[in-house]
Amino acid sequence: MLGLNLETYTLVHVVLSLAGIASGLLVVAGLLTGKSFNGLTAFFLTTTVATSATGYGFPFTHLLPSHVVGAISLLVLAVAIYARYARRQAGRWRPTYIICAVAALYLNVFVLVVQLFMKVPGLHALAPTQSEPPFAIAQLVVLVIFIGLGAIAVRRPA
View 1 (cartoon, rainbow, N blue to C red):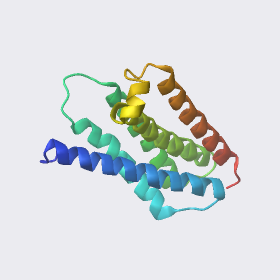
View 2: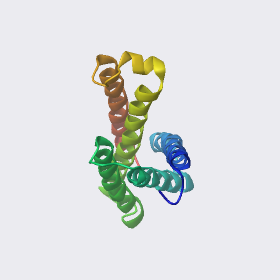
View 3: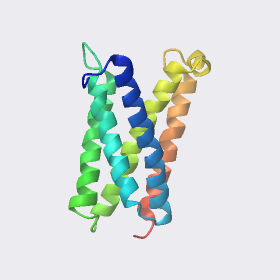
View 4: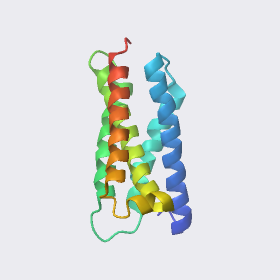
């Protein structure tokens, strides 16, 4: 845990996650409007990688769903970073980058929704085990929004 106590480590992880989400939303807005936010994109990718990586620093005794989501996120981010920086989004690497960047942001927001249903009393009351319809509906709405944003961004001319 980088020599930090659990409370401080958790705060660092949460701040990285929220910074990744906020910057990712701006990056996706740029993809939709044809604006290239180079510095912000680097910040988004870096904070999102850090969010996924720091998720493994929490104490655990067995593999958790969050570890699987983190692994998927890191894989998607590796492809996004390669497509953007090594391949410079040339040809098919542009839609590859867009899809992977949007997917990485979606995974971060997916975890945010999970955490909101765990920590916010009103939401927790609606779905205490996260297997209830309100949780499934919230996650489905988030998924549909990100699929739509990704599809629009991919179709937008470079």
